[in-house]
Image (cartoon, rainbow, N blue to C red; front, side, top):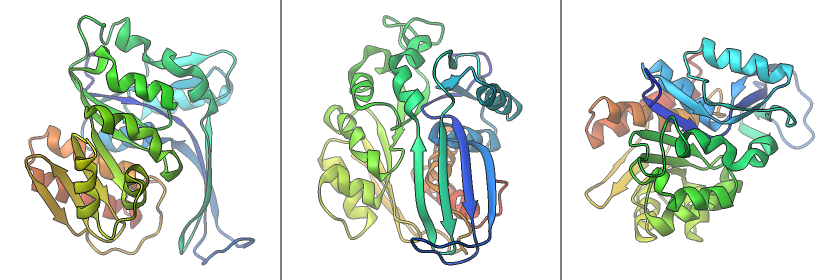
Length: 297
C-alpha cells in the first residue's frame, strides 16, 4: 500500500459539468439555473467522501496530459488524495460527465469515459507489477471499484489473482452499465452497491423493494449486496444477516453522486469498526445529508 493510504479507488476521475435548476423540467425545457464544473466520476466521488471521513484514498485511473488533466490532478492532490499511480495518457483527453438536474430530479446525463475505457488494464499496472501489489503477493486492503471500466477488464478483475486477497467493493457507474457487474455475481468475490433499478437489471426482473432485490442478488451469487431505493428502504444482505432500514426524510436538492456518497460512507463506517446495522445507518444519513445540499458541492 502507498504510504498513508487507506483504500484504493479504481475507476472514473473526470470533470463533472452539472446544470441545476429549482424548476421542474421536462424534455425541451429552457430554464434559469446554475452550471458548475467540479471534480467528479464515481471513483472520485467515493474518494472525496472517504476524505471527509478521515481516510486517505489512492486513485487508480486514467487522466489526460492536457491542461484539463493537469488541473484535475492538482485538484485531487489538494483534496487529500494520493495521485502517484494515476495513468497519464499522452494521446487521450481527460474524461467528462454532463448532467442536467431539476426540482424533479435528474433530467438527463451523458458520461464521456472513453479515455478510461481506452486505457484499459494500464491503470492496474501498480497492482500487478508493483509497488501496490504483485501477482504472487496480491494487494490485501480495501478497494472501491466502479463500473466505468470495460466488461472485459471487469471480468479479468473478477478472477485475477491480483485481487484475490482484497476487500473489493463494486458499484455500477449507472443503470446503463449495471450489467457490467455480472462477473462479480458469477465469481462471488465482491460487495455490490446498487440501486433498485440496477439490481433488477442484474437479476433480469423487477423488484418492489430493496430487501427482495438484495436477497435475489445473494441467490445469484453475490458475496454481499447493498441495495438502495431513493427515499424508500435500503438493505444490506449477506449469508450472515439481512438488515433493512429507511433513510431520513429530507428535501432533495441534488442527486448526482448520492449513491457514491452512500457507498463511501458505508466503507468508512465499517473501516472504523461499526456494526452491520450501524454502518448502514451512517451511510443512509450521509447520503441524506448530501442530497439535501448540506455538504459542499
